[in-house]
Length: 453
Image (cartoon, rainbow, N blue to C red; front, side, top):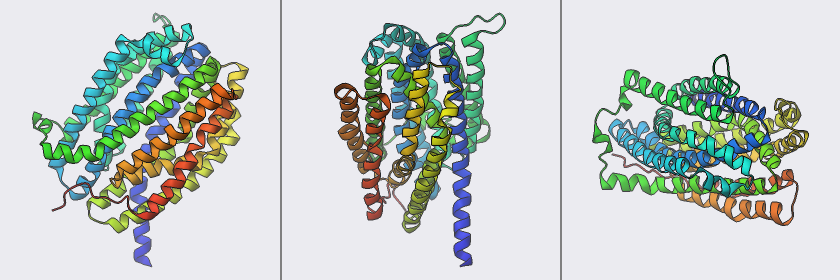
């Protein structure tokens, strides 16, 4: 009995050491994003829509980066469990090479063709003009994001979640202060409006990259790249890593495209509808931070024990995290329903935008228990277990075979109010959870992706 209590205590101690810093990092990020949205909201609904739709490009880009680094983290976590540092450096080299390649592609597309991209989402000329101005400037930040992402993920996978949290906090606080100064103008600095928001974003991402690299090369030399040898990857190693990572990259990229299709439909309803969804998503991000913390903690802990050849413990961890996700998500959902009208009042928007944002936020709240479970399922259990192909199938079938058809039917054929369209789309979380339960129970998701000597 005493041994079991000690085991549980150790589990929660390790979980807290990973989940709390990641949750705090996401809380800081989401809170400051909310402050940014409040600031931009003072400029008008068109400005909120312009930034929201412009950030769809960044959203797709970031999720591809998330896919690359999430896939690489499967190996990093298992190699860390095996204490194979040389292989971890090879994984880092591959993550940087892939991340920077995609960064360059997205930079060129956003800098050269911003109007063409925005016309996919909206026909509102004012939104396209404002968004193009924003996108051209922000596109320069993509390269820096590619570098900081690779190091942040590798640090988390080796159990160092505090540094990415602190770096994120400093850069995001800087972003908020710069936003205030550059959007509204202070002293001799003229108000730059939406252009100021873009410059603030670029500068904060440069700062984030400088801070994280400074720490790595000064205090965490185990991950410092001091030779181009880390980029010399054997065909065998590349094949081994990409066999598991490619489904994760496809998963994130195609899921992001699915989410963008949702935005296309919302924009066809009205500019006000896009603004309402943007505000609700920003607030949901704040309430969702615990789920992201649990998801990332489960990925690291399950990956570590599989790497240490302790598959029974991995299954036990999966059960614990699943239960925590459902319970925590349900509690957060209730809090969201109660607080929805109060938090929306922070935004200086029209009555119709405010009313729709409250309704949408409450819809999100009703599905929060399902969402928390699915975050842990996809990011934590399936990926850390190496079951990336099933994860790909589950995500894409729920979004593209259900979510995307429903959003187009609801918005274009049935012409439902925006909050009812969001209800239809959110039902894909239920489908994902039901199918996911079966996969976890089967234990087929436990796969060792590294060679064990």
